[in-house]
Length: 102
Image (cartoon, rainbow, N blue to C red; front, side, top):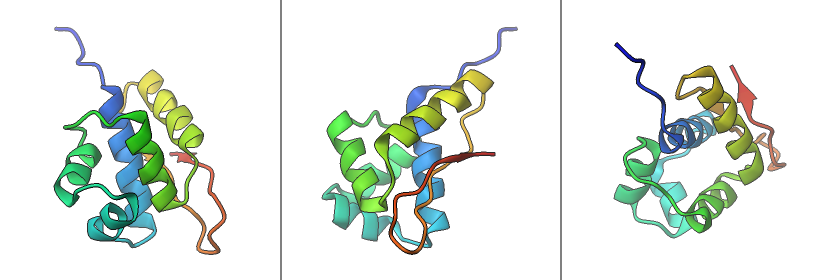
């Protein structure tokens, strides 16, 4: 039986959720800052919705992480065949953080 491949939207969702939870921020905080509905953001984090590049940029801005880092680490997770972790946590000082693949 063939292995089921991980989708990009799943890898991105894992990274976004991990960044948010590591920052101890709520879905509501990020959805407000990114100007996206709470339900839609939740679906993006769960890999159920494919986010546009504009929406991903807005979510990354709200999380104070680099979109490029999210994409690179999602690619690394895809190459490994796992949806994550694609950690994207911004340091408390507000400087943009580098995604850490575990």
